[in-house]
Image (cartoon, rainbow, N blue to C red; front, side):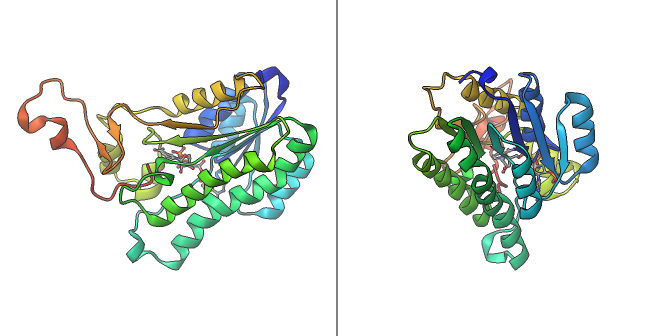
Length: 267
Ligand SMILES: NC(=O)c1ccc[n+]([C@@H]2O[C@H](COP(=O)([O-])OP(=O)(O)OC[C@H]3O[C@@H](n4cnc5c(N)ncnc54)[C@H](OP(=O)(O)O)[C@@H]3O)[C@@H](O)[C@H]2O)c1
């Protein structure tokens, strides 16, 4: 369905990274975009820059999300808000598990509950769920994160069945490492975090993910792009090794020497 058939979008986790890039991309298509996150200042700046409608809401606030879903008929829903905690499962505390489940999975389920029935009734809609390669592969990340992203992945498959017979499309976007601030949000603001996860790597940018989402939305209505796994070219799953490109391949500077398999975070 071309963009012109859609009028409104809800994007969660819009204050930074992939969410902010999706808002920018959808605004370029003249979609009325409702941007949800907790950081008021970042959202206000995004609204000033793009003309989106900012909503300072925690996605786990069911009442506030229900009120928003009651007021606006959404054609596009982008479930993007996500969190992680760096701890291994054997060291996990109660709060970490609750937070990861509440934001990454429970909120996604409730927002779908609030929005998808309207799409089905109108015979028009597109749900984009941002999962992660963590939902499909093991690489020693936080097990709660892996579990919630696998849940989002299965939900995406199942939603298509629940909406079967109507023109409601469901796309799961499954990113590997993307150059966003998620690593600082997960591990803290120490400059070494950027160096460890971003600097020197060739990574997809948030705008690349937004472009992939736009491609799925712009496809003809007869076409449902169900799943897109988007990784850096220089990243593989299955042990998850991430390589820095080396201009001169001295043996001790080879890609293998630069791999980092210790305590990989979310992506
Ligand atoms: N970057 C990667 O490498 C990567 C890889 C695979 C999957 N992903 C997934 O992609 C999505 C976006 O990640 P990103 O890289 O763009 O990370 P990010 O820059 O940390 O953005 C996360 C967004 O989620 C929002 N958020 C967190 N908790 C929230 C809550 N309770 N209510 C509302 N909003 C909340 C944050 O806004 P506030 O703090 O302002 O609320 C922020 O806008 C996540 O689901 C992540 O798991 C990312």
